[in-house]
Length: 45
Image (cartoon, rainbow, N blue to C red):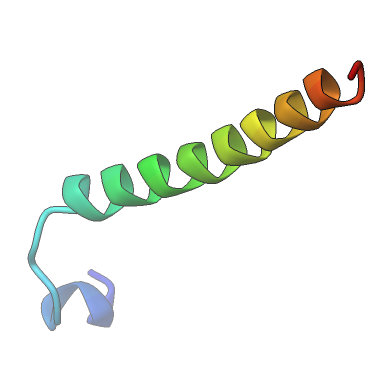
């Protein structure tokens, strides 16, 4: 057995942090998409 497997520091589940990371990255790219669409629509006027 690996010596690091015997002394685990954090036994919490990784679902919550991975969900927060997914939502944060999705929100960032969605914000870029929205800003690009606003600039695209505003360029027609």
